[in-house]
Length: 103
Image (cartoon, rainbow, N blue to C red; front, side, top):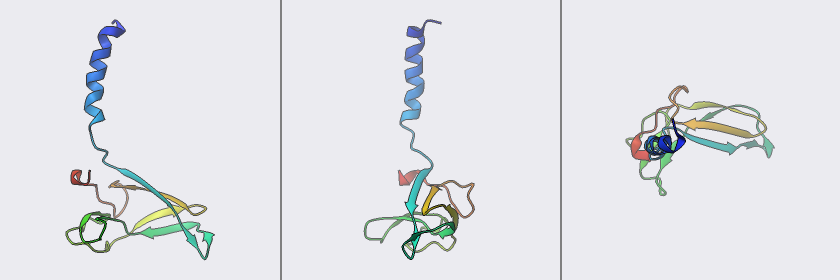
């Protein structure tokens, strides 16, 4: 098949993926204890809230009807103070999917 004939099809196919919101957000940070980079497992409680903390969009444990600290934590490995967690990755214990309304 001629590439010029195939190109419009690929553009249309790709257009459907361009506008889709991601289902998972990657979040990373740096953690220290007494000024030293932390190594080990950390238990994080994560919430996406508005600027004033009066409205909760999402929490890792799915209890976001009222703005509050999540009841359940997510275990994250920390190496040399650096960690990364995939928000909304429901394969992680105590992590709920991100609703489309977050985006």
